[in-house]
Image 1 (cartoon, rainbow, N blue to C red):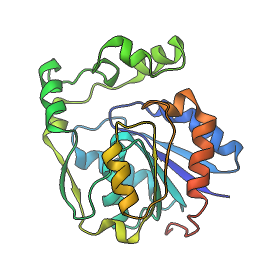
Image 2: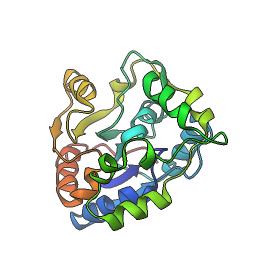
Image 3: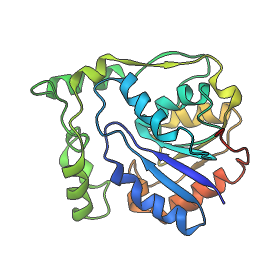
Image 4: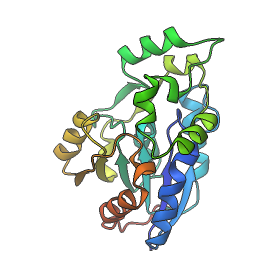
Length: 228
């Protein structure tokens, strides 16, 4: 039985991960969804992830999207032993300070900010493109309503990535297409198992059962328990 913690993106509500958590439990895993309710800066986001993971004895963390940026720091603190990154950012092993979003996206988002707050993630791109990522209009409406407006100042921060962070992590990468092709390629260069399901960035909503099977198979090799 695997104990799996699901790490949600700062920019998305935790409910995005709940269908995947239910499907993993049907496969025999014990799961918990870890979201970040408020993240005015990366340091506070990391602290929220740390607090949620502390002392729980997780075998594997599954990090989606922006949450992948925080896996290196969690690994350095021995809060992560096995990690499956799902259509997620993957910082380089060399370490350094990683921006929370690419520079071009940062500029575009800053132009859309109002009252010091970013638009909801569901408003970053044309409405028809975002709607296509969801299985139903109802799920789109529910996620949109729950999606936080992250402070614009969050984009000015960086996430500290310890050098050599991959040395002590058993990793795997699950992509939902080619958006994170560079990250998938890097995962392969690290010797990590990789898999691609052409589902779009919110594939954990459109096919949670299929994603759960893929995550479960990738994670099955992570037998080392996380430290208590």
